[in-house]
Image 1: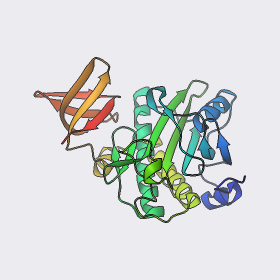
Image 2: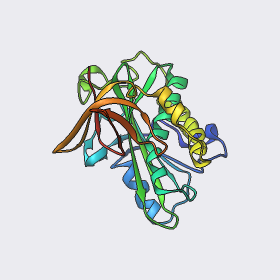
Image 3: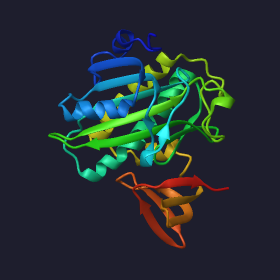
Image 4: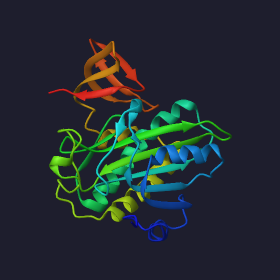
Length: 256
């Protein structure tokens, strides 16, 4: 079966900018795992891999993620960022989130918002998850994966708190969504690579900032407080018990 997104069409739409090698497939184990393997073998920056279906898709903390074939899209990119302080790499999931939010607005006309650090929401329900991984090498590579629920019906959702573009009333094709997300990611990634301060832009897109939240750091540690912003490294700032704490990672729950 041919993939929903034609690689030649997509490469032509994206032009000769950041994305140099564009590949699409109907099914794969994991787009992130495949690009990580290629990164270790020396693949260049700018590789794109798009799949209609993943049989071994992964989320954060090695969670398994799978959707019915053709009802969502998985896209991963391989980038080799310029020399930067390791902590600046913490910005890569938020950068991808900004791109997905902008891309979904452009392609599908939906009001996509961000949940720190790696989810994209529509009306408070998750439409996309993001997984960024560092692959050591010379230079090191970043593999960023985005799984977007495109056509899932209500009875196909993995959890009740999820949604899809179709359920939000969008009629954009999968190809249009992928094109606009990758186009937006090229712009946001360049800003990050140039050292731009993205805190104001991220806060403007983020549903987490300004809310009372619970940050689950481990099985034995959770913190509740008000999310007041992100710092220069992209860490979430939470005021809890009069103390301002920063978090580089963690599961975040929006509290009522």
